[in-house]
Length: 357
Image 1 (cartoon, rainbow, N blue to C red):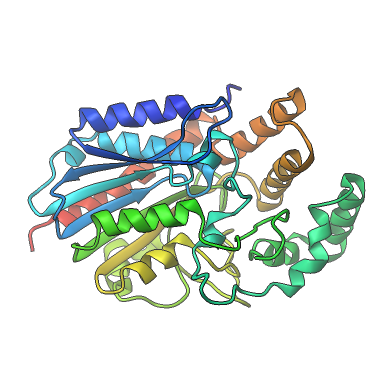
Image 2 (cartoon, one colour):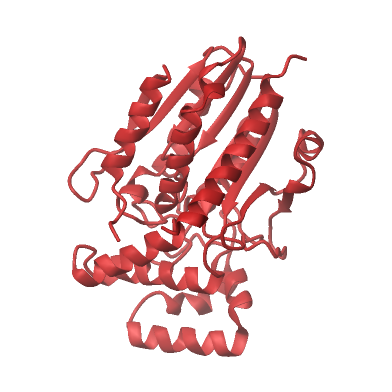
């Protein structure tokens, strides 16, 4: 298996955006990629910069998942509908909001931060995670001892109980897993700048955050994830009907979707908090791959690799291959189904947004 390559992926996106006639702007990341290359979050705009109706598509919140997201954005740019933007409408594509994670084939960013735990207001106390403390030893220290402790917990507590705790996020241990950070990340600040530059004039926005790795294999779930009901939720339900799964997150909540309900700091909630005055339909497309316990094993191996190993070694390359294959399977049927459904969702949203009132 060839490892995905950030440089090639970015080049494909920029070429597709230029062919579609998009206006392009880039935010340069302060750190390089694994080959010394410069890293960017790129923004492509088609249509009126002052448009009141905007469809937004964000890729790469979890870096390695960005290859699915980028391919989905490229495919949409190549459609006739995306290139024929009606008056007072715009299509806005945020390409790889976590470029460091995409380039380094990591789910997290350069600070070991899971961005979908980082989108909180750090002027307030971060959520506490006392139940995580006992499980922190699964991810640090002596690997053999950590593996033994983790195996014992799996046998005695079961994967669902571990998932509810460790995937909820924690804000204390920077070397731990699902770390939410101690301050707003570069990616959070960059997304805030993009919102200020492109969305403040909007009155109606349909937004997608693209993910893989949770849920049933090959099934792209359409989700609305937030901490509480929001202004345009009824409109979203009317638009997508039974295809839409609504998930409210927070302490003590649960979900059978594979997406963690106990977590805080989701990008989706940040979008609602940033744009409270507009009619925002904030959605997530989450494409299922392997079972949750197996995906966690691969993420955990990658976590250990960056703590104590060498990503450029042969062992490191095998771990990266397993991680990439877990989040973007090379199975042609998986990719075909996921592409078909993702484009269906985009088309349905776009036609609704651009329809004449």
